[in-house]
Image (tube, rainbow, N blue to C red; front, side):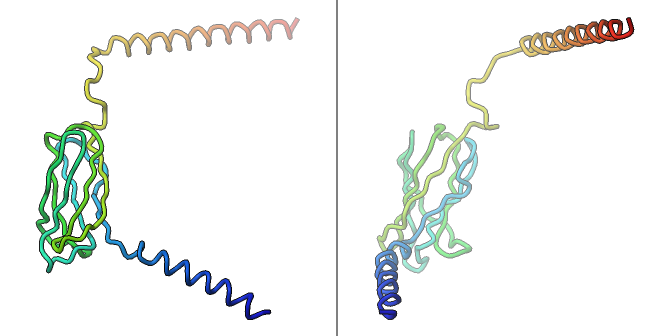
Length: 162
């Protein structure tokens, strides 16, 4: 009975591990950084590709792209990499999928192209008058509150002494 209590969960764990093992063995594609402003550079890396089997091809698809980028160097941590300059890209999210030189797929990753400076394109055409008016209104409100508070204190002190 005790042996069954140990053997059945152990067998179940081994079976589950055997089912999950192929998923962990799949290669991986990475993009660094995952967010870049227009005109920035991202590094595409196919970590599972063997440099000896030929160049990796990165397929970049997104709002205005469907292009292939060939790997240019062996990645420091293994695999192959390429740099992608995002000048002329439309804002949005792009998907990168890699195929190794031997034809095997190496997964996919995404990156996002943002406006320069992180603000949305087509910002306000404001000369600062609205900001100045808001600041003046807040200052006047604070001063008015201070006057009311001072008058209440004076009346409270006067009432307490009489």
